[in-house]
Image 1 (tube, one colour):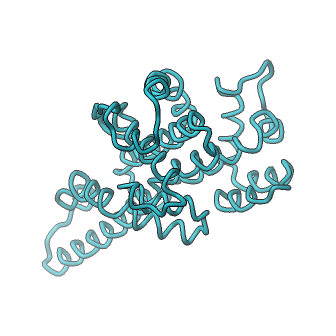
Image 2 (tube, helix red, strand yellow):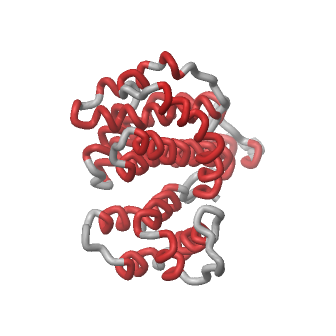
Length: 275
């Protein structure tokens, strides 16, 4: 549904009814749209109870954002032990999306493109977790077979690969998010600008010139996520000397406004988007 929504939104003549017919195919996503319409961000005098009312209240663009966000948060195919990891990944993605949008607004850049690129900047991570889950299941099966042939007891519930969650997952995220994310972007036929952000966000200077500005915006948004602890432990950063701030020519006044607004205004929005 998320993929089809992205395709549909590329049509400038898309109607609310077309989008409604698509969204209602997935009840969990439809419920998320209604919940968002009743959240503090969009709440009106009357509680929304129907998908059509919800979509009319929050608007086409916000419907797309909610649908794509909800679609990315599928836990299907991922071991329950990684649920907390997925939660931090989604928090980081939501933070990157909303902060990218805020940066783009301050620079009078394309806010919609910035939001989508920020949201999808870590799309490789959920895919990697699903791959790691498959590997772990294969290892469990091998260990079970070995125990059977050796006539030894096998405790599947307490079986685990050493360092899987603590070492292998963080290493996979760091080394392979970009390449796996780029593969997802190609499979989903995402816009070239978004695919470029996913592939070249670290470092943004390596991005093609046509997409370097957007890539730098998303890179800076992820740096703000690190600074404020969205999706990871907080790592304070001096943005006054940050090279991406300089590359984007963000003035001290705009920078200070962003630093002030992110925890006060954007932080609560992240919670709404992800719950």
